[in-house]
Figure 1: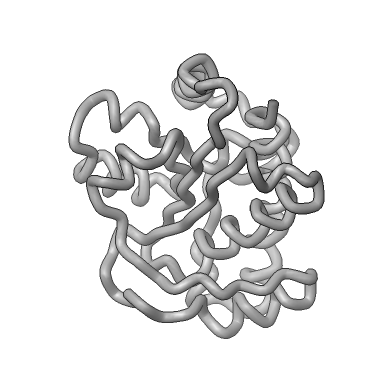
Figure 2 (figure 1 turned 30 degrees about the vertical axis):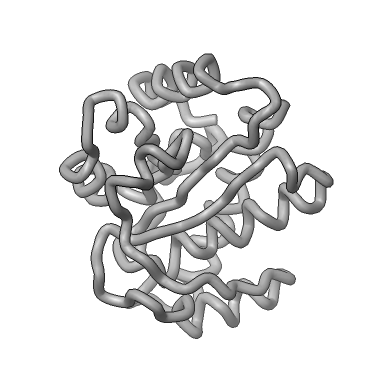
Length: 177
């Protein structure tokens, strides 16, 4: 995994605060909740289900902006995800302060998402739940964020899915009991 020291410390704090026997609750966040975060949600669900660990996880996604509330993920992301055997059916929603109470960890796709989440976090304790997705990338990754593919072509969507599959596998390995 990527060795981002502040993020690694937050991950260790989240791990130590985990309550045994309770599902681990993770929220993936991007800007509009139509590309990156619903893809991360779908990938994470697929990993958890393939390991038979559905009872140990609660997985959701949201956006920092209200641009696409109620919409399905971007058609292009759904097409590329489907080619990998993933069906993305989540409806876009916006992050709210309750999410900081409901989730153990909030995973942001880029620095802008981290900044926006910090602004809405209801407390310093809640802010400590925010972790960049890049903290879960393998050490060989050249990326320090998940780029937004919205204005990109097919290669952008494939790159995002590759990064998210890598990060979600590492996230699962880190937090699954």
